[in-house]
Image (cartoon, rainbow, N blue to C red; front, top):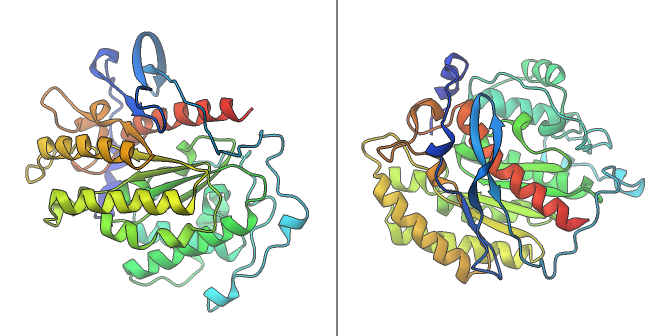
Length: 351
């Protein structure tokens, strides 16, 4: 997926999405296939200038989940003594500090125009012992401008994400953690739009496929997430992969995550629609139906947000995208609403 799509984000006009035009959001929950997240006409939430119906959430008992109340969002004294990351960086990276991992502080927005800029900002944050989702925007801007930049590769991104995952694993302490796993749609999720009150680890790489995601799950195996959100497959379709290949990779991804993170809620998110003529939305809908089955069979959850992004013709809403594939700020507002409601319900169950 291409990075320059963000250049158009700031030029988008804020458009209203009628409440009735967002038909159905559902999540099939592990250990209770009848539990759905359905839209209620009587209750509404405002996102930007849009009005979106809220979701009636029913969660089953989270058996085996050792959730702790959010009594303290600070690492303990012992957890602050985190080992150096020098062995995985030629220059050496200092450990995350208490302030850098404090999820109570909401980061400010920062305009990004390329994948290179995002990469070097995140790398610069790590070199100061911080995670980019928790760094002050002004400091982040000056940091990335001060380091040498070069053309990036897929392996560069894999290494960066592994560094961030290691930092989180070593400095998480008693903090709660959610992880986004996927391609550029996840990678570009604005950090200021992530639900607050916990740590977030973004494991998205632009252009990645379901096969690529499967091969790099080990990078964050040492973390202790409460929730792992998975979305991949659109690049598989762009590169000619078969439905069977995508579904087989998804099944392996869920199985691997279940084995490595048995206490986490694994949430398979529906592949989103597009406005690209070469990508069939009917095919995407068919794959999503199969993902529902896989999630149920493998003990994961399925989050259906596909319908929230479609217009009357079944295509990705023009106001929710910058190029027919990637999401605009409005698009991320819609996605954020779903995550907020999931995170809120899980937090209530932790108390």
